[in-house]
Structures are given as C-alpha cells and as structure tokens.
Image 1 (cartoon, rainbow, N blue to C red):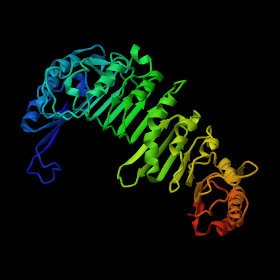
Image 2: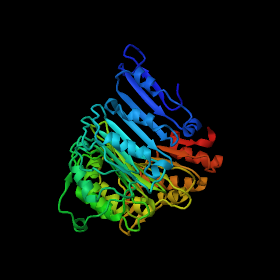
Image 3: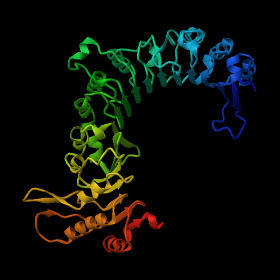
Length: 462
C-alpha cells in the first residue's frame, strides 16, 4: 500500500459491510516520505480497484512535497465524491501555491452529483484565508453539509449553497461575506437546520447600523451557535434571524467589553421559556466559564439546550437566565450543578430566585461552605421569611466541615416541623451525598443519619 493514499473498500457481497454497497475511502496522512517527494503512490490502481463506487475522501495535512499530479487525479474523479474532507497545511498554501490553484481550477467548473458533505480547512495560517470559486458553473444537487475553516468562497451567491442543511463557518477573518451577504445566503437556504459561526469577521453594512428592517425566517434551524463574532455582528444577527424551531442555542462573546445581552434575551426568552414550561425536569449547569440550561419537553424525544459562555462572571443572570423561569411552573423539578474554581463563588444573589429547585450538586471543594450556610438560614423581610429553595430534597456537596452540614440539616428539619408563622417551610432531605473532603466525626455522622435516614451517603465510607 502506498504511503500517500490508503484505500479500503467493501463490496456488496461482503456481509460485514455496514452499508452493503460498493464504497471506497481514500485517506492521506503526513510522513517523512511524503514531504520528501520520494514516494510514487499508485493512486491509479487504488481508484481502479474501487471501480465506479462513490468515494469518501479524507486528505489530512496535504504535504507540500507530494506530487501535484496525485492531487489532480483525486480531483479528477470529483463526480464520484460522496463526502470530502480536506485539511491543507504547508508553506505552499500560504503563498497561494500550486495546491490551491489546482483545487480552484478543478472544482470551479466541476459537477459533483453524489457529493453530500464538503469540509475544507486550512491549518497553516489562520490570518491568511484561502479564497476560491467552487462549483461556479458545475452543480452539486445533493450537497447538504458545508464546513469552511480559514477558507473563503468568492462566489457566496452561488446556487450550489441553496440545498444546505448544515453550514459551519469559522476563522474567516478576511475576504469573508459581509453580515448583509450572510443574511442573504441564509435566506437562500430554506432547509438549513444547523448553523455554526465562530471567529469570523462579518463586516457590518451601513444600513445595518440602524435597527433591523427585515427578518430572516429560518423555520427549520434546530442548532444555532454564535461564537466570538464581535458585539455589533452578534447583536444584529440575533435581532434579524427568526428561528422558531431552535432547540440548541450556544453563544460565546469572547473578550467583548459589552455583550449584546438585550438582543440575546429577545432571541432566547420566548422560545426557551416555552420549552421550560412544557418540561418536567430541567438542569442548570454553572461553571466558571459558562451557564447551560438543558431539559426535555413532555412528549418529545429530543431535548433543548441554551448555553451562554462567560456568564458566571458577567452578572447577566437577571437578563438572560431568570426570565426563562418566569412565571414559575408549579410542577417543574429543577436541578442545579455548580463546577466552579477557587476564584468564583456560587452566585447566590442570582440563583436564589430560581423556582422549583429540588436537587443541587457542587463539584469540588470550592464554594460549598457558603452554600451550606445559605441553605441553613432564612431571608426576607419582617413579615415573611423564606428558606432557600424550600423544595430541595437532594444535596451533593464536598469540602465542608461536618458541624456546618449538621447545623444546616437540623435547621431545615426543625423548620419543617414548625406550625403556623409566616415561614415558607422546607421539605425534608431525601438524599444527602457528602464527598471525601467533608470532615465528619462519627457522632456528627450519626446525627445526620437520624435526620436524613437511608438517603445519607458519605463517599469516604465506600
């Protein structure tokens, strides 16, 4: 087998073939012999052995020293490509060398009737996008997935994009479409279901510096990720896109000084509030880097998720998270999971207002003591005092001293048995899981058992 290409195929007569159809997969890997150009791979034989079957092409780190004729042979059978993933590397591409010219010459007029997925990545210079005309004249009637990284089209208005269901653009810093062009592209893709945009510089057109005058209706989008596009681009993108079927929204503002929080809230609140109000169980994960809300709506197998990066340190809970739970849903069971480093405390002022919290987990030893103290105390005005999360039945915590845990459990248990008054009494713990870094004496452990019963678990005893 030659060192430049590896072929594997399975014939329809082979019972072990999962597709039970003729298929060839061609792969390239980088080795010393590739870069030296000394190898003479027998691509012709590999292609001949695959007969006329559809090809799944994977070319990784296309080596600068390899013979361009081998590259031309693979491009020469683009009509047989079913999927293609090409990762470029090497100084030749940075200087707009021979590889890129061969690619553009071969594909701008090509017809690929079988192609369903195309991924083009340049990994040598993220600030030096490679641009090319692809399928300018030829057709790709089955193309559904397009993924470009540090690789830019010249012909963004090409009809070959119109059948896409997945579009991923990343690290396009120069020569990319303007924001207005991007919206026009999306309008021309009525069936798009997955849209991922990351680290792109979509120039803001003059007419977009005013409030939006149109809405781009993407009725089928289920996954929408917006990462590090800049304040203006993110703001206008969220205001101008209508995605009523979105169930997976992920936004990362990067190092922006001002986040487009208002536009983000207008996008997610009506949609994900409706999901939460139709759910029985919802989980919120709070880390030092992001906050994630996820769950399943009743009667559906697919879940929903909204993930906002860097929210833990941005104090945007009242704008972006709490409105999702307003008004409170009486039957909702909400679980919280905190995974914070030593520099971030649990945002008690923000999470205090979450309704229906039934389970809380704190990963690691940080912030646990503050939470335990809050759970054992009442807050409110002179007329009504309330307990933090009165429906809380399960707690998993670590790094807290036994006496503090016991004081909290006793206070909530006593409040549960009190009659009258204006206290919103807490329920009794049904589960209390203590990590190995909780220091607990045998006497304290026995008292906790009397309160929690069989629901007490201390991992140091395992």
